[in-house]
Amino acid sequence: MKRILLLLSAIVLLNVAKATTVLFAVDMTGQTVSANGMHVAGDFQGWNPSATAMANIPSTQVYYYSFSTTTPGKIEYKFINGNDWSAPGGTPENVPTSAQVGGGNSNRWYNVDTTMSKDTVLVSWQGVSSSAFAPFGYNKQYIRLAVNMAKATTIDPAGVLVAGAFNGWSDKTKMLNLNTAGKVYEAQMWLSAGTYEYKFKNGPSGWESVPGTCAPSGGNRAITVAAASQVISPVCLSECGNCILNLPKYDVTFMTDISEDVACGQIDSVDVTGGHALLGNWGNPGQKMAKVGATNVYTLKINQFDSGTAIDYKYRVWSKGNVSWEQVGWTSNGNRALVITSTQTLATNCFGKNTTCTAPPASSKVTFKVDFAGTSITPGAKVYLVGKGNNSWLKGATGGKIEMTAVSGTGGKAYQVSIDSICPGTIYYGFANDATDETYDTAAAGRTCLAPSGVGYQRVYQRPATASTVYYVFGKCNKGISAISYAGKNEDFRLYPNPMTNSSTVELGTGNYTINVIDITGKIVRTYTNVSGKVTISKGDLPTGIYIVDVTGENTRTTEKLSIR
Image 1 (tube, helix red, strand yellow):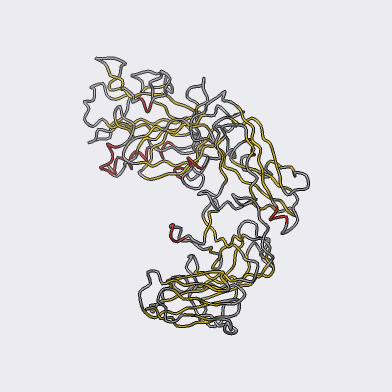
Image 2: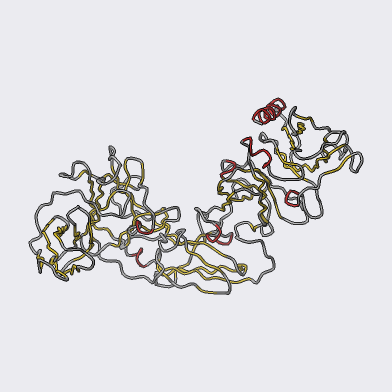
């Protein structure tokens, strides 16, 4: 069979010049081929059942026919066992419903694209997939996709397209409107087993915005190909289900409060954008919002949303020509979500939060530290702190990042940088090793310091009003473990009772500290971050033994043994 596939490929190549070659092949294994031979008839040759004979590849039951054309668009055809539309001269195939044009038309169809070379269409007699070729390493399944453009105001002159992992996210796959009375556009393809992400497009730049409920991976649709053909029901462009017309219309008033951002700098304007034409389809700029009196609340009423419409959206703040997208860390895809079932005014939540605004803490200094100990990663020539979202707090940064310096006494494993007078109370950030950003452990247990960004995850830190330190292992939420030289000890430190029976108290004094309780193997078994004053350490499930209580502050580090009985 490898020889068959190579021969079919050679036939295509020999015919490729300026025209596009179309090659049909059918496997007749298990069938008795008529003495009149195999034929193919279609609109490309006037539907003559005896005019177009198919050649046999010797020692096989595979029959093929190829021809060249410079005319793009739909071809309709059928295979005929013999050379007539009825016995005794011949028998036309019964085309499976999944491969028919539809609407009462039982012919096969094929889309000729004269801008690209075509794959050979290999099918079994009266079948759709090439399972008959599986023993020879050519096992692909028939997939048929459809998009309903009924809600599109116009169709781009370049046509309706589908782009995805199956075609390199290119514009090579043009979809056909098989039933011109409607606006459903379809594409067929033969794919190997696997999962493929994709999107529909109204022209080369008209990407749909897929709602999160039907976009399992990064805003894309997806199909999993297994061992059977699939005909996917039509979906409305940028929606999860098919188009429903003449729905009730509802108005939505969008509201956001930017009080926390106003406290941290100049605000020029606020807008809202999202995955719907009325919201600009994530465009730039979005839909500008109006300030409500002397408040820091902005509002915008948008009319005539269809009932049942599902929307992903976000607010944005513009300052000095730069845009800051809000960071939505409480949803799986990093966007706000709304299903419209009535006229409504949305809650006035704070920009970047799903709660009302609170005054940000007083500006304070934050020291960011990252540790490469315990990883397989070697620090590069430069290690960076990277600002995410609104990174105006990252003073002195170039391209949204600032270089960190190696911490003495850590053997080149730990790096740090301090940023003075940070204003935002919530900070989104990450670390980078040379030009490579961190790759996070995003399992539920491993993302305690992370928040969704819409395209993955990022670190998040709720800053206190006093100087503080964050210290993590590169790519993880584990606390940094490399020993660091500090200016001195915390003179206010006290630990009692010691030994511990049920609990012990740590006295820290003023400032913010991190407490790690470490067992004799070096494992951190308790962590308390951004604490001050008196902190209670409970025995809980800790076994008896000797532990180290490690307390770090801005410029102090104190350790003491703790015995648990």
